Image (cartoon, rainbow, N blue to C red; front, side):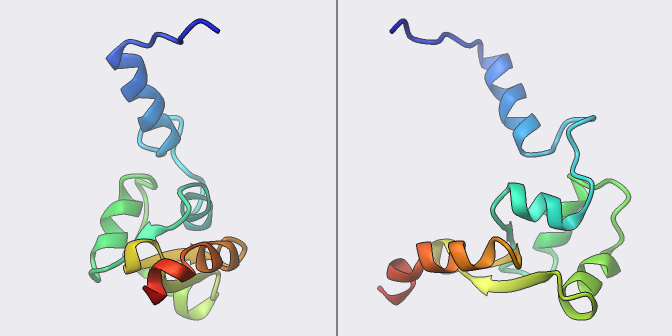
Length: 105
């Protein structure tokens, strides 16, 4: 099989598109962003706001609080690299199980 050749510009564009960082590729909701990215880093209080604001330009900080504590559509859990992440309920069991051995050390 012939190796695939990509320019650096196309590789960066592909990654930014998959990360919901380009116009037209932005997520429709916090849950969609957290699901497709397999969690949003949340080790500091402000970290998920900046990560999500880049992907959802009209995001209000209170929407994250509501998703976590009112609607309960997100879970804040210690998973990847032992740090806190915001995960949708549907993704949480897989992420939690997949990172168990790393978290238990």
